[in-house]
Length: 121
Image (tube, rainbow, N blue to C red; front, side, top):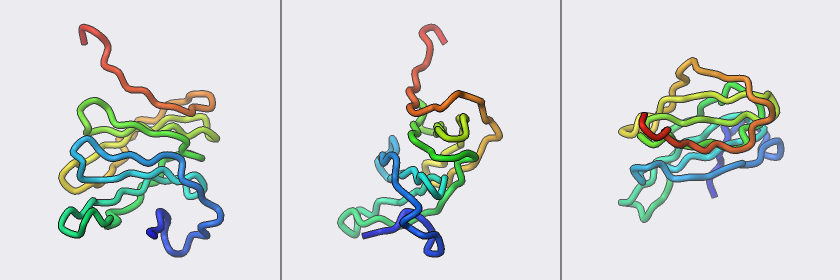
């Protein structure tokens, strides 16, 4: 068992919303509803796929219901359902660090992210 929230945060106040593997296959990301964060774990192949926590990143909103990588694998978009917002983070595929880009958008009760590059873009 591995916690997706810091030790001092009461786990009964948190549920995970989404779990996914990054496009490189080296990291697992989890959204935390309650802690309002994304947790990044590195997959350790030399330890039979055990996970090592890289860190947490606040989603800049409440109840991150869903998140998705863009097609490049360098950006993560998080849907914060209870704060009516979407936030964009840069993902470093070499170390798994997420950094807020400063881009936040008002969207009524977002609950799913689907990324598609427009035809001809």
